[in-house]
Image 1 (cartoon, rainbow, N blue to C red):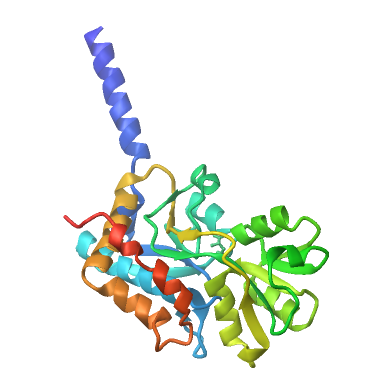
Image 2 (image 1 turned 180 degrees about the vertical axis):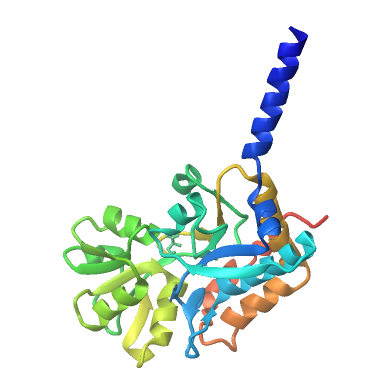
Length: 281
Ligand code: GLU
């Protein structure tokens, strides 16, 4: 009886070590950190004029890489892979990426299938329209052709709250913006900062306006596999480190400060997120 018990216990121990390898430890072992970032969502993840992957989310994953290098006591190489609104969650679930830093709102529906870091940015959904458009509120979209991106909270808002809008869900924001520029749609619905990024990147930014009240609150979190506390805690502690040593402030003012073309005064009031980060060791 005792022997059987011991056998069962050691078998259990073996199974749990076999299934419990944290992403954190696999990264240390391989020396590679695969991070999913956007390439169509300036200023969070986009390709700049030199063809380089840059943005707020990119800077966040670069900082996490520094903390991984220190923790693993060996150089950890950051490999960035492009993700979209519709594949960022599957890519985390199937291990294509260790984490996605991809303008992802923490929602309870998503928490059913993945975990998130603590919130590291807050935005809200608004609308991008041609300047002078009669569209000023969500209800004005009824009966009109509207663009959004597949798998996003904006898609959900417009489909449920402007029931007679003719919604096209694109794969990329850049495709949605091309459709708006060509007059195939009359508005794009998504987070205001992404809309601002599209406007600012246009040949004539004055032709486009971000309008209407905030239609939601969108707290962004870094997406990770479910039930991997060592990895999730590591990432949260890295965010806390950035908040406490001034790095987070440096990154936010680089991308959203008054010297940045993405400056959005309305956002500043919501940028107190790091104040609620857990404290460092
Ligand atoms: N934050 C929103 C979301 O997670 C929209 C922005 C995006 O396309 O990532 O769905």
